[in-house]
Amino acid sequence: MTQSLAVEIIDTLQHHFGTTDWLNRGGYLMPDGQLLDLQRDNRALKQFHQAVTQLLPQAMQTEVAELTIIRMMALTGIIRYEAKGRLHLATPPTSAQRQRIFQLMKYSVNPFSMVISHATGITLAERRFTSPAAHELLAFYQAVFDHQQYQLNREEIVCRQHENKWQWVFRPSGQIFAVRSTSECHTIMDAEFLPLSAYLLVP
Image (cartoon, rainbow, N blue to C red; front, side, top):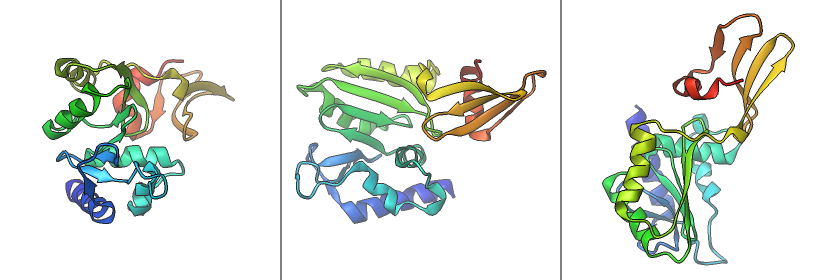
């Protein structure tokens, strides 16, 4: 079901926006290496990245458009990018995506910031590259996706005491994802955040 939904979303987006071979026009990098055409090189016609959220199922929608986009990326393997210097991933890139990313970054006059997020929206790692070699990019993907060498953005997480409980809050959405009594060691945690519990549950 999840795979079929991912295919359905990809088909819907490509049918609506079309694809392009021009890096400056695109805004998303599809799993097969195609670029979703947001016409971002045309000041009068360009689409914002948030435009894709209008085509997503209601079940994927959140109150924060950026988090909805990350959910979509985590499900479909789509990568968000800005030709002037930013890439945002939520899954390991496919071979076709790796080639496109290298093409985009290697000969750019601008340094690139690459952000990797968990499906919950939590930033797992971020690094800045300038004309990187392919092996540098591969090492970064492997460190995060294969070896869980995370560098969480602690500004996204706050631990606070409320009455007789500790609460862990994901700031971008305001979601309380874990609760622990001040007198006990037992923690109740949202299932989506469980894979990151060892990194998040730090008072």
